[in-house]
Amino acid sequence: MSVVSDTSKRITIPDIRKSKGKEPIVCLTAYTVLTARWLDDHTDLLLVGDSLGMVLQGESTTLKVSMDDMVYHTTLVSKSCQRAMLVADMPHLSYTSPEQALINASRLLDEAGAEVVKLEGGEDIAHIVDHLTSNSVPVCGHVGLQPQSVEKYGGFKIQGREQEEADQILKDAQALEESGAMMIVLECIPATLATTITAEINIPTIGIGAGVDCDGQVLVVYDLLGISGRSPRMTKNFLADSGNIRDAVADYVDAVKSGGFPTDEHSY
Image 1 (tube, one colour):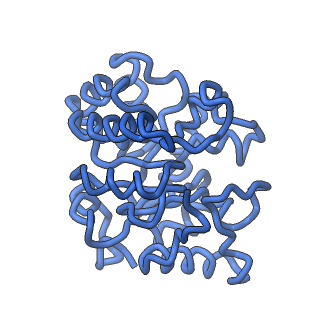
Image 2 (tube, one colour):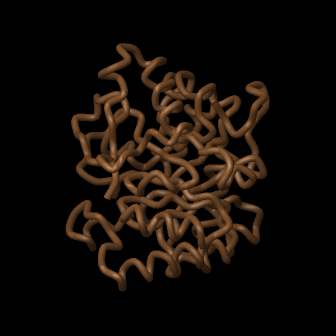
């Protein structure tokens, strides 16, 4: 069920890197001690996403999430994260310069217990990613639909349908790899583009609304359980058929590992 066969072993960055093209990587979001306890044995990565602004704080975007919010929730998740690798989002305006990014990333790693930080952006933040990785901060990139740029997009809209946009997203992914990112989230891009990016770069890709050919998949856990109050195309309510949380999570893991999720219905 995992990139690591020994379920007592902590998943490491080399484990994730070696899984590329071999074993699908399973990721879910977690925001509390309890959700982390549900998920830790099942997933390879736990992501404390700034999506907490929407699913916990009731905001329409992620833009109001603060560093203190992220440190607090990452600390909670780290208490129950014994096996999965813990990734935490850098929130909006927390990495406007390399120096600021390093200070804030250090809070998530040293104060809150994260092992990897995630930043949105591509070529425009490559110098920041380079600064972080040069200072031994593991980084996960995020290209395609970037929720922290939702106002620029005019809403949560699929990215990369036009050739110029697609070419730029590929360049963004390549720039992040060159800057030292260990993996990249691909969000809401055409499945064909995600397939190309996954083949072109040597680090794992984690898809959400990006088709089945990514090296792994991530969902917001409340979307997986059908309790978030929203149902974007890239999600599936696994609780509807399973009847309980443990089985819903297990069904999601099995679907990702077998290539049964996402289907075309959940892709663009």
